[in-house]
Length: 174
Ligand code: CUA
Image (cartoon, rainbow, N blue to C red; front, side, top):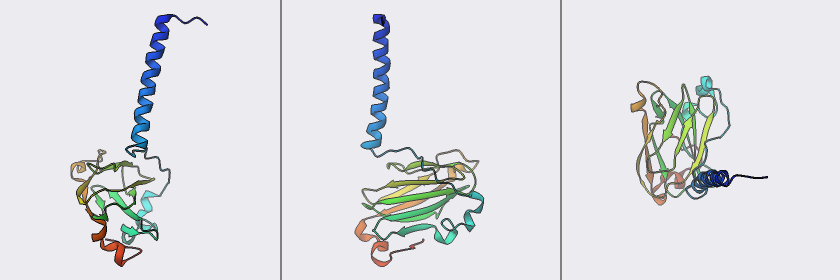
């Protein structure tokens, strides 16, 4: 099949650009640990307060048997609940969010924690924070007039200073 040299040249350019984009995506996914938030787990948003996992007394930070930590939060206009959580640094963390009303986003600046919270779905992500500090957890999807004020505090403490690991194994709700 004959391909005009100029056309062939542009084919190379198009494939190179596609390859570059794929490379950037793979680099972010594998080196920076950034992944798509496609955790397809459904939940009835209207019955969150009655559901097992996202009932009010189940929210917050809990320690799993293997020492990893799970954080359960509800997003609703206008806040993430609980409003303040404390988690250990250098520990595998699983965050699980459910929206009580509309579409929200969640983002912690200077970390790789960022995802959408879609009503009807549980958003889950896994991360690990390298060092202690105080961080805001911000909403980054416009959700109404109070969107600018939708945030909560995350306190990351050094692993050895974290009381949850020593004293309790399950249900360290805060
Ligand atoms: Cu919630 Cu913006």
